[in-house]
Length: 240
Image (cartoon, rainbow, N blue to C red):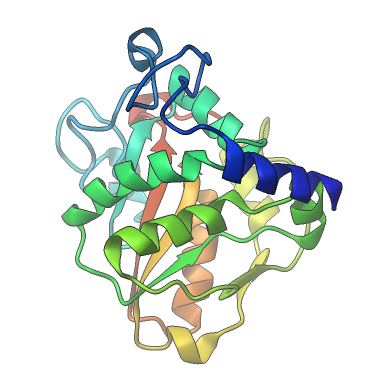
């Protein structure tokens, strides 16, 4: 409870756009100082048109060709490397105010997708939520909703079982680890809808596929996916 109060106060009181979000150096009207901005790669160049990961050429990556994801298309704001990794880690560990910076970047990317009927975010178990004090994807979904005028369906999907950490597992192990971990509980609100799922990171796509699969089973017409960051296609780490 104290952690939740502390994070809320930090979110409200932190002087946005006065200090660099990575190093704390004084800045004005921007989130990153010049030096730290150089460490963050924005996903503005060639990407896979399906998963949205950075690629060498603007064509469907071999992974999406061999094993198409459950979502129709995905976009992400930054590449999960360098300063981008640090920003996402900070967002998950106290710096909830970063939702505004990330939502601004994602809103720009969402122009590439058909307008969805609603937004759903990747859930956490109650145990994990209590430990962290907030669900960063819920905060991000709410911020994106304000920028796109798209309603959020809160608690539409639940994570119904605790899972082992994904880091260090093989791709097959990660998918087995997440199998049956998510359940869509607001079926009437999802049925027939075009749904946008919000998450913080897209790497192998195991989490995305499980959440999107649950939403499709609930009767959604189609699902799109958006994340703060995604790994470059050729350098997918053994994680989420």
